[in-house]
Length: 99
Image 1 (cartoon, rainbow, N blue to C red):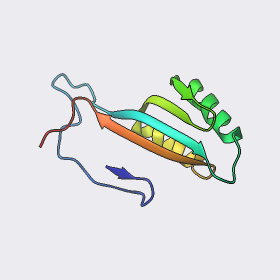
Image 2 (spheres, rainbow, N blue to C red):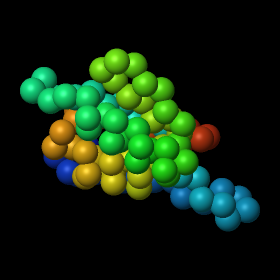
Image 3 (tube, rainbow, N blue to C red):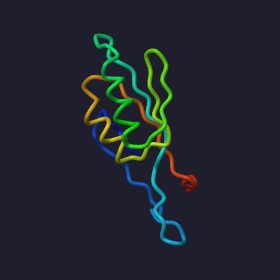
Image 4 (cartoon, helix red, strand yellow):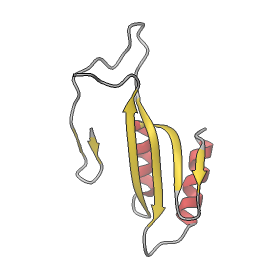
């Protein structure tokens, strides 16, 4: 699990490839809202960035959700927009890891 606040992660003990060698990446949804002192321009920039990467987005007045985002792109968005937006991300692997 990756913790953006602490910039750390915990490894999982599972194979990262399925039986035929395809990767099983983490993916999920990323939500962003402006900082209390910010405006919506960063949300607009994030929406354009996500669309350019081929992601579908849902946009409300003060929140943007990027659907089916990969871990690498979520980290890139956090690096690029983390100073202007409050970013929350829920990533999972399909099928889920079973211990």
